[in-house]
Amino acid sequence: MTSARSLKLMESQEMDECSSQEAFIQQCMLPLPSPFFSSPDFVCQFRRLCDSMCRPSLLCSSLGDILALESRVLRLQSPAYVFGDLHGSMDDLRLFSSTLWPLGIHLTPGIFLFLGNYVDYGAFSLELLSYLFVQKACYPEKVFLLRGNHEVKFVNVTLCCLADG
Image (cartoon, rainbow, N blue to C red; front, side, top):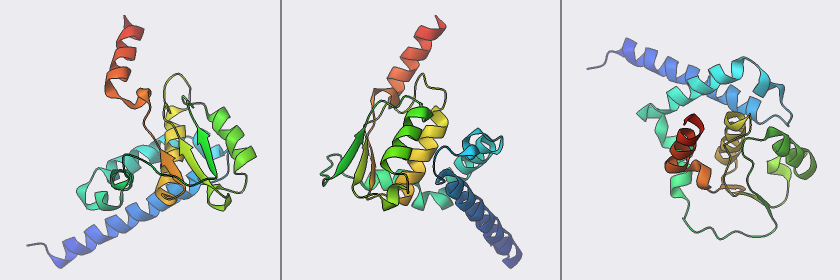
């Protein structure tokens, strides 16, 4: 049996994790270009967030659940903004952000469809994915993420082997 003291400690830890997750999400939602993505705290907070989301108690509200509930065939209403092949380029994402949703995705009419290939040769794949994942988690009815060929394990393993050999 779990003691009352243990339960209090667990609840306190979960509240701390929730507040740090909320702080990370708030930082990722700042208009681009955001100095947060180039700060030393970004990777540390991102890793902590990933570690905490891998715990079963926090999985019920994760991005994976949101994506798993979506149909494999999307039927989207217009107007829609369609983006493809970002390949880790934060410069492209910043350009889109400043011209198409300068006040934020939530205040822009229409939906946003990202066609995949978020990672690869760009220098900011992790930051780009973080930004898109937060937008999807916060606005699941406005942001849609498809998987491109660079989000398939076989392609990434093959590309890594070709680059090494």
